[in-house]
Amino acid sequence: MTGRAGVRLCGVVLAAFVVLGVRVLEAQVDQSIDQAQVHVVEIVADKDSRYKSPDGGKPEITLKAGEQVLLRVSARKAKSWNRDGSIHGFSLLRAKDRSKVEGWDLLFKPGNQQFRLTAPAEPGEYVVVCTVICSEDHEGMHMKFTVLP
Image (cartoon, rainbow, N blue to C red; front, side, top):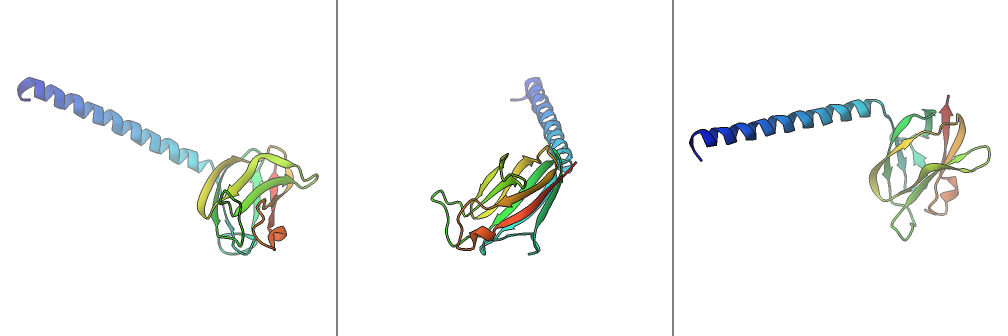
């Protein structure tokens, strides 16, 4: 294509790329703002049937009521696992009556994964327990979880 038709087509294509570029940039800005408002929590579900912080220490999670959370998990293979390939579980229970918190019942497969969650609205003490029988030490796989007002 040559002449005016070719120039017009090039102009239309260029305009489309500019609009697309602006939309991609807007999406990236929205995503960075969204990530800035999310509390990132990192844990390791380890092969020795223990939850750990990434530095190997004993983990405790503390969040504000209703806070947005990005839970990043590194799950390391256990001695046993579920038929679906899950090697560890993560269930949030209210400490006072051991009832489950809706939306916080997770299964981990080997490797890294992340979950977008919302902290419970009710302040108080909670406990995280593993729900996959991962070894003979499975009962020791728990951690403290606190929700502040």
